[in-house]
Image (cartoon, rainbow, N blue to C red; front, side, top):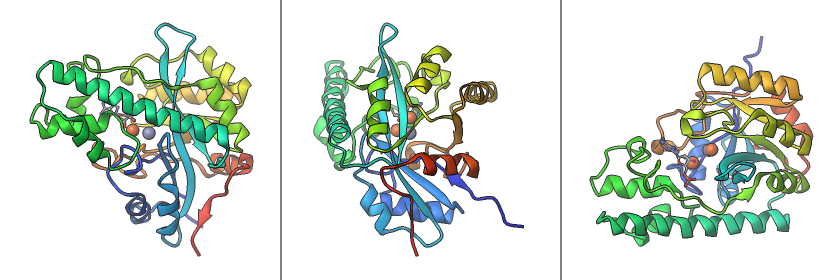
Length: 288
Ligand code: AMP
Ligand code: FE
Ligand code: FE
Ligand code: ZN
């Protein structure tokens, strides 16, 4: 009898706010015993080529991204994350939107740094940009500056309310979530709502929004994620079943920026196969 495939559909590299380079990430995924790994950096496909080039034999790579979105149906607008799998990275409208969001992240990061500096906190924007090393900039990079300055001990602490979680949290100009679903579909990709019920991250969207997104082309919901309680996972599964959506599980690995390990949560082969069958952009890559 064969062992079921181990499939982790949500990871980050140094192309965004992870700490392993894309090549190191695929090697670590193979070492962790994964059969399939998705590279889903925030708002970028910049890590794809290096991950493909370094792909160890026996590992399949799903090329993807995690799109920074917002829902404007509530005040203030709610930020949310959309995983997009196997889309065509050259589709102009989607590529332009991702480039715009990356610029918006830089503007917002710089504004956060100015707020910190105004309170006498010694952090420097150029140093934070250097820390991101050309990857999509995010609050985890600012968190590293707070750690280097000795103000907090861990990334988790840096995301506390007195710091980047609330006091120094600023919104960024994210993509309208309905537009994002449409753009991902138009690029032949498969959109899956990341950690849709993660109340510990902040406000969560109502089920009615998930239903509206499903009608607009959303394909799935991420249920098994470390930020979901057992009750939240169950809620997501039930909602997915009601709406005919596929269900995924994934680590959302960020290297040392988070404590979760590769493969800590996984996706069932049937759900993975549904994603592959729906995709029209690029194919999964397996090395020979
Ligand atoms: P940003 O995309 O700049 O808004 O920053 C959000 C990112 O920070 C998420 O994608 C996670 O990688 C990370 N993050 C959010 N909350 C936490 C937390 N409590 N501890 C560690 N990392 C976090
Ligand atoms: Fe992240
Ligand atoms: Fe996310
Ligand atoms: Zn993520």
